[in-house]
Length: 151
Length: 151
DNA sequence: CCACACTTCCCCACGATTCCCCACTTTTGG
DNA sequence: CCAAAAGTGGGGAATCGTGGGGAAGTGTGG
Image 1 (spheres, helix red, strand yellow):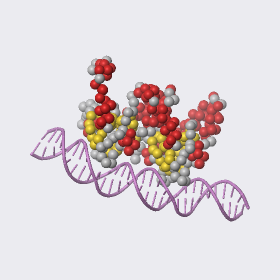
Image 2 (spheres, chains in turn purple, red, cyan, blue):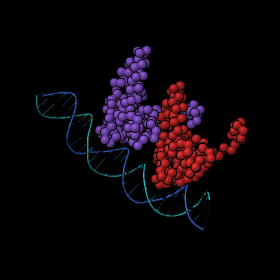
Image 3 (cartoon, protein in one colour):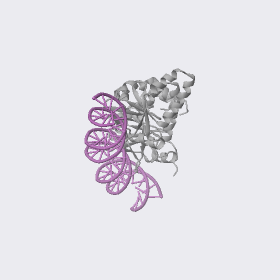
Image 4 (tube, chains in turn blue, purple, yellow, brown):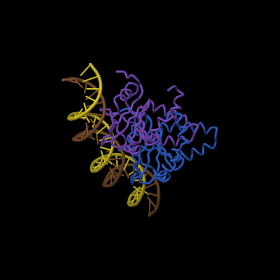
């Protein structure tokens, strides 16, 4: 079955069970198997959330960052910070990934996780943090900026 | 059979059944199959209504937003808020889509839904909200604004 | 080198939602 | 006036999210 859209979209509040597993939403899984290879790289993102990239996309980041590191020595520290938190997570038969304890704690994840489709990546948030951090996205200023493209 | 006009026009009040499904009007469906690919992306719009884009049109938005995000970092939050509400909805054999509960609630949809053709997109409103929000469309100010293009 | 605790992985199982199909009523069009 | 299509409703199968039991694997300490 072909994916309808080849990017991750949508928002789901799913539970993180006692073993630290989260289900990857079915529509994300479809994108993942259609366009990618069923494996996700999980890592820290700024501001207490996690990101999951298909390995292909992660490799692109890796390449781009390597390029950047040639000219900017600061980038290598950035690379250490973020790549050290990265972990390849394969989905189990039920379509779930195991979130490493360290990442779980970093993002302040409790029994619930917000899974947010962001195109070529998936973000994992504590639901409350998500609302707090992204509340002002609805402001008039941003609306105006965005209205220009026809929203 | 070719559609006479390849854009969504008109206003229909249809019912939202117990399972959360709405019929897409036949003339909309014709545009959808003629010009697009029978799939709609449903998402939140400002002020308590929903929008349905053909996948092609949604992709255009996505591209424009990606462009905007390069220059305005705030836009990434906007992308989170709005794209996270998006969901690809395929029509069933009867030409209906299932409205996700979260979106249904956001738009305050009850047993009835107003489907409004808006050219390249379709809007879904609670009928009462629609009337209230759009009552002043007939005002002199708006008339003046529109006169510029020869109405 | 072995025993132990602990984490990770592979199953199976349950309830709820979603999807697919068929059926009925009303409207449209020839 | 009849046939086709449109809008509405619901039954049942398949899928999805969730939970947990137990095996396999890992690392630690004796």
